[in-house]
Image (tube, rainbow, N blue to C red; front, side, top):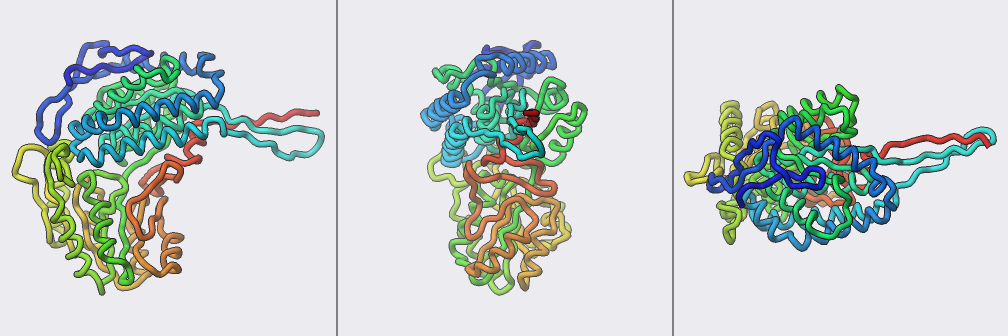
Length: 478
């Protein structure tokens, strides 16, 4: 793959210092590319270019419907290149080709969805006393910085790029330093296609989160910051953004629970529970990392989960038949195993897995731990790896209390055929999303949002567009 470059002001370029970073294949540990390590001067150049593009009439005065046509062309490019991009993402991130392909096509779908909304961003007229006309305008927020995580490198970039462009903002995207390749390749494909996107409206800046991410978040020329990442990173970005009162959207961690009652379809639930924690090797904010199961079906369901995931082949993501790839980096695997060991010291029994695989690459066994107490580290902390904890409950009230006893509140699942119970739990769970009798699930048109330490703001859906627009009230004395 060789030496990659950044995309600044419509040009592909190296860092102003010439410094680069190595990019690895986590399944082998091999260096597969180098990317520029952006400097503060590069950040400044990027923000200046983004501001100029935002003010340029080619973009600022563009018919909103034309923005939609551009997004549809970007979606078409994404679909056409999906397999190539999935190979790159699997090789760079460690996930399976099948998962990567599905996620990239989801990203294309997201572009299509927001393409259709670009000319439907509307204000309102407001009845006020006297001979007056009062109305609102929704206008683009401005220059937006998008700090992208390593677990879904292209899909989560497109999730925020799409509404930002639909609203008429300009975009600076910074991929994670471990996984920049699929976003760079996508940007090249967009650049080479005849989409009609004006120069500088979309830029990609590579480098360290501490330098580039903080530089963007604290820059007075940036009008909005979007981050998907861990809670400490979100807190750091929010602190930097607060220096200029820059608004933020933060999609952070999770400690999702699948709550399973005796009347559920246990066989189907077991498959979904495995998918919800072992897909992407558990490196997902919305992972169902806690299994809360009624004591009457505890043993039966645990056995079904272990039997199901034992069929999952673990190996390099590009190998045929592999269901769980490597973790993103050996350093991250070490952190997961360290947290697992610390948690087990407090209690719990490993009934499956629990170790690193003895082979090259950042591989780890799918792990199931039973007997986890609600005050234990394994119940409370996000491991961000393929570790499922199991805790039993006796009744609905205990199940709800257990599910809510976490600092996070992203996605929870409820498994029951009692619709009254399902809707009561959906109402009372302290989280932004609830899925009943399937897990995990989302769509471009549905809000992806977390409560508590899981974040601030909304990704996806029409609600996401509100972040990328400013409201202006106009009063006219008639």
